[in-house]
Image 1 (cartoon, rainbow, N blue to C red):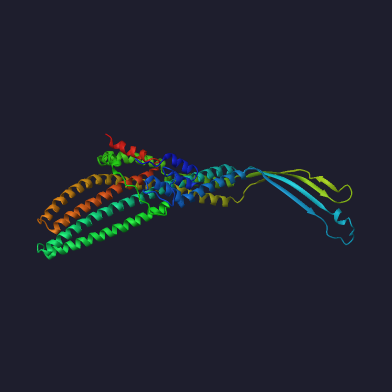
Image 2: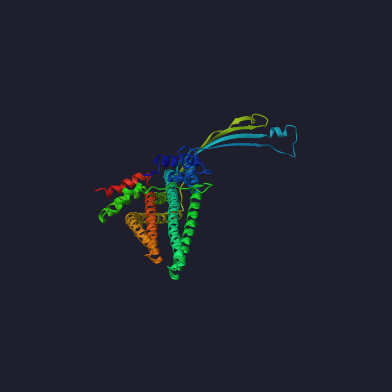
Length: 470
């Protein structure tokens, strides 16, 4: 199985996506994959790395993490002693009684002072705030992790979308070729009088219908390619590497063969894993903790606070006599405390925080339900598509054999245009259903990986295969 490299994941998150350019270079086997010059074919791993490097949302999460780090530093600084340095100078301007030469000198006074202020007891608010800052930093990291897997899923969707559109175009081209062959044969027979006008008109309509379907498939491929190009940040349209579905053959067969009981056990195991790793659920839990700590912080407003200040300095006076000259300030120490008396304000604030705490608890329950619903939907889609891949593959093989039989009869003029059209439509229908099932399976697998925050695809595959090995 292709991996979402665990080492890359941890490094990428540990540096908080600060150097996206290096990540893009690491995506190429020779380290030369640049945004302006895509390779001849683009692998899924390369597309993921480029999308990660090009994501503005991840850059935003990086800023949020840095902001939380600065907030924690601010809290630490606020607990340190506050230093202050002051200076002053003054002199008289004039005096109506005396304006001698020494007047300004004798009235000059300067001073310099230094003081230290330290909070001794703040009612425990600093410790609670430390916990809140720690929770906020962890929430920022969970946001980044969720964004990381969201980008991977978005990339998988775009990448598989291009491959599916290309396969659909190939199917449409094949159907058009059959319609053109049918029309050319019908023209010969119509000119020789061996075919009635109704069958010939049907062959014309069939050809035009298939050509329109082919043109629509071309537009779909172009649209899908543009999405992938924009996501990866490449200047030229990338060409995804052909996908080998044989890689997932064992997993597809194993999932398709699960009994209802085994399916239920597998889903339960998946949900347990996802509940531990899912970033959105972890963020909801952290939000609930944060709301609880905010209630605690609000109650601290009832508690008295105590602080201390120390100050000293030097003073120079230009007055004549013993009173003049340089003299030190006498040092001073002061203690101050405060007790809040507006208890009704604090009580009201506490009630507001309690309501927010209750809301956060409800949000956590919603997050649990949403995760269970999304995971179950993706899991059922995976199981359904696995079974559909096997059944539509067999149906496609039978339809092709049936078409070859009908085509041979048509060449021998023993079958009508309508019979050939029906046989061709059966082939196209089953081929397109097989394409949808294959890529639907891959997208369901990618969605489960996102919901469970699996750093490696192999870990998810091993978990899924564990239920199918009997």
